[in-house]
Length: 220
Image (cartoon, rainbow, N blue to C red):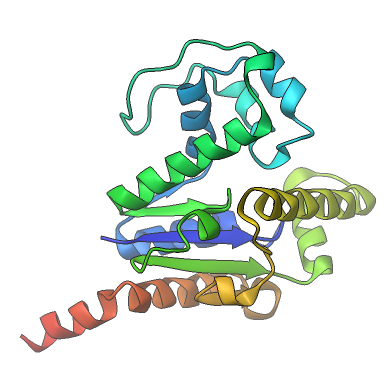
């Protein structure tokens, strides 16, 4: 069935592009659900999350609010809560990798972030998309969506992008900015969000073979 991953710079519009790709393919977007499943599998509590926050920022910053979430994928029993000493950032990262690979095996998902392009980099049935944008464009979007001033928006772009890059580099040995990791890298500040979403959907359809199947169906 195939799977799509979306890597993104902060503020580049992934929360609009990813759902558009999913709608075009009949897939489901998974974003925070990955963090929920990671927390569910390990049985994390807020104290553990706090203690690991600086070491695995790309995943643990989201986990504090989802510890009691219902299992979204039906992937087995919830682990018993563990103390901070029994866990480390690599345990979190490896569990996240396992969740992503489970989604790849199931197919039919658009996975946002979390190193999906690296975790599923060996799959021929995966389409990897990267979203980038000019800093000023991203800053303006963040100011409008979060109600923060320009300085705060710029600081968020710098910190979140650095955290995401460090996460992928540390746990996968991959440069998140390497264009060869992606089937397409789209600049949403040049294309616009809507046009970028249309192009992304078409790239995914072609990479995963949907365009060819659609054409065959039309001829028949």
